Image (cartoon, rainbow, N blue to C red; front, side, top):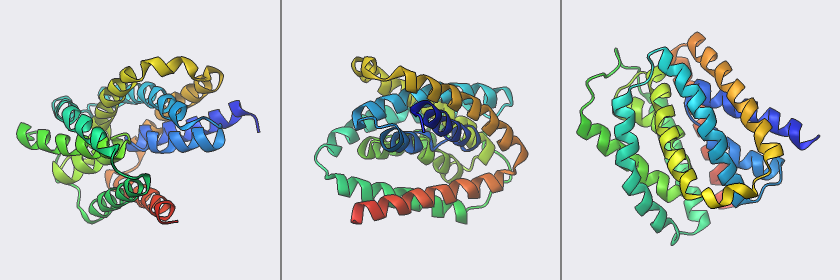
Length: 248
């Protein structure tokens, strides 16, 4: 199968995840680029940031039009997490790959269990306290920095479980967090962008953007409770795979 076809297929799946669930894009993009498209790990993570940034912006616009983005909370999350993410990134250099992988699996699994056990809030928490949102964002930034992963799959559980936000609004708001964090990370890697194979990355991005629109439509048709359970099950699957990979 040609690289372009694989890129189109993988991009569509990742866009669907970002549009419907508000996260999971970078988690799916990096292994797809490495194992399906033969990218090096450095090129894969850089390409993933390009793909996730552009796709998240597209999905964010769609969710914002429906009023499902809590801008103040999302910006607090992104701003509060910047410093801790830098510190966490420095600490990560002194932690083994196996420990980081296992830590990721534990965090993802715990977030999934919390979402499966929690109930939807009666109404969206539009009166979120800035201090609480900033504290949650700082914690999210620290975990993201240490584990070296995108924040969407952690931001959604935090917005739902910690701040009591409805799933639909958590999805839209997490896209804002993803966009800001991805842009910041991409800026720091600007010198590596020219080595990317744009004949593959281009179709990947195009398919992901189209998939994000389909994902947004899917989110409008499926109940927030169902989306929450789907997201939790995806997290559990990722956690189980990475834990096995870390142990074996």
